[in-house]
Length: 352
Image (cartoon, rainbow, N blue to C red; front, side, top):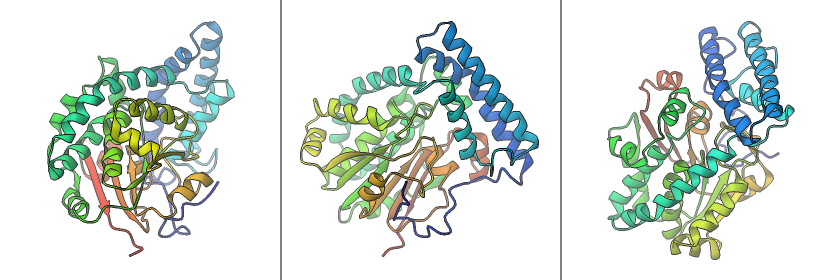
């Protein structure tokens, strides 16, 4: 693994936004969150294996082992090393792998990708018909609307169970001012010289990546920016994987000439991040990702896990755009907001 060279202070870098070691109430909150996710997680785990008694038995083992870990952590926060939201994610994924479960959300991700791709041509046509300023606002709002497709947050799990999430309806409800609203600063920079190289860390499959982040990447490429799209290497919840993103981009290129041209001439590429969690530690990324990002002048970090639950206070030598919709009450409390508030945090790089 490698350290991302864009970190402004790699020695002092701490990815974690929450203190689970010293704050017992916060620790209890997050343990409850992970415990509440478990039934839905195991349903998808069994679905990914085609059901049957063997998958059910293995799922019960995960329930017992991981559930036991969570209960132990309530009283012994150092039982499995320094405790953080990221560490609990690692424990959960380890329990799933130990029982032979791989990408437990692969079925629902494929279904949601198909549905979102069907909506994409209409959305791209709408965006292409806008003036530049209106288009940027619509692109950022689209990222927020797509980011609600999150099967790691209890409230959005229930929304999904109740019949899915309407991208257009969600987009229509997002109105400025946002909770963290640096859009004007972003728009001012956007109106100047195009970025040379942008690295975009994507989050969930389905509407999130297809209707949110890919249109943003496409617009950057159309402006002449070299774009790197980076997804997880290993499975975590319904996050899209690099192995899924590559064929997805090729599929979109079949009907969109802008994406096809950018892929063909190398202006748009996909690189695996080396990550296997919904959060990310930028001192533990793949060599390929670190190399691809080395000369970037824009880093886009999308999603509550990567941009808020981790890395919210992280600083970088290049311009950074952190985009997310809040779907956890503790995250809302941390930022002084409400559920489903949105964050557009734009920070100029420290490198000049």
